[in-house]
Image 1 (cartoon, helix red, strand yellow):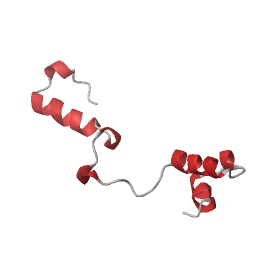
Image 2 (cartoon, one colour):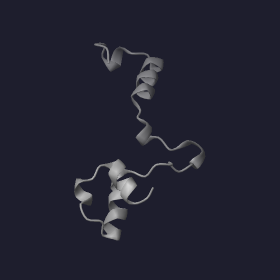
Image 3 (spheres, one colour):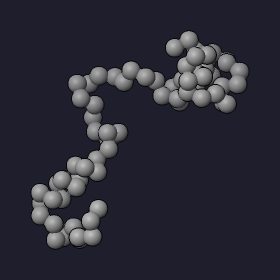
Image 4 (tube, helix red, strand yellow):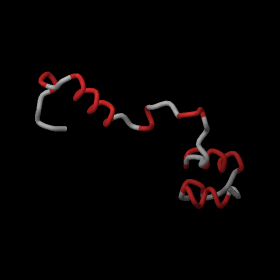
Length: 69
């Protein structure tokens, strides 16, 4: 952000800064589609339910491979 204080910015400048700082995680997904790839946590939970040994030391790719995904 620039050194200007927010009070001296125009409403359009404030809106532009606010929109630029918004992350994808806080915005609702467009079209309501579900993401295609499971998260590492989701893979870990699936591995835990199956009782896979060594799952706590596995990477996301290793978990996916061990689960056959």
